[in-house]
Image 1 (cartoon, rainbow, N blue to C red):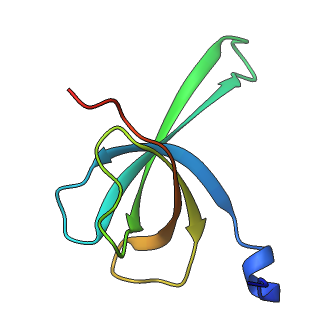
Image 2 (cartoon, rainbow, N blue to C red):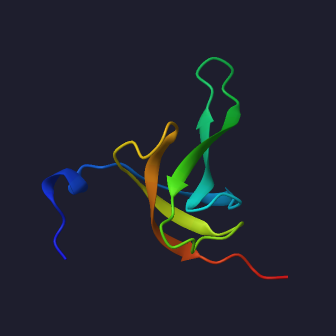
Length: 90
């Protein structure tokens, strides 16, 4: 399957599913570490995105890859592209 031109330039992120309670939607947390420009300490920034999961495949704790898409709802602008790693089941 070849990608369209617009699909090649969409941002992709990798994160952990922190909530899968909604239907066809998961909340993905992206953690980024960077050095503070003034204080020179390392800071962890956590961003949470709502992503569309058509098949309800992703579960809490899974590592997923999400891709930018058109607005799907008031606060959903990402789609789950792939489940990279499954969370261990208890």
